Image (spheres, rainbow, N blue to C red):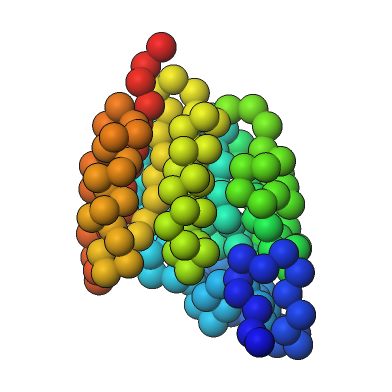
Length: 199
């Protein structure tokens, strides 16, 4: 039985890989392993989301379901002054994320957390490439919990493939948030920005 990437303690035999990728003109170094999401390369949806983040991104940013840290590292490469927190239920993935942040000369807080279970405080932005295979109930709860952890006027940025439910997710998000819109599309991926009401 293979491990899913949202398994807390993957039992897959280690299969460590190292590679480099260019994002925003900067060469970034990564290490991955078996039992994590997109172990061979940066997921194109994750890259599209990070490219779609606003230039003025600032304050506290949470990468929910960070995996091995691709989106955290890309976000910090483009926005070095943000205060990043990364959270994941997968112990192996989170350990890799910590190493990848350090390997690129960056800093981020790491939380071992099943969704928002151990997340405290509020954030100016939450970014996520949600674990679609965990099921709609899990990811929709994640969207609801993100709203509760955003400052007034804060934003949730998520990426989801059209064929994996992006249109229905957008409908749900428009009912949940003050506003929700698609800000980028490519290769079947939709990046959706959801905003909370201002104070």
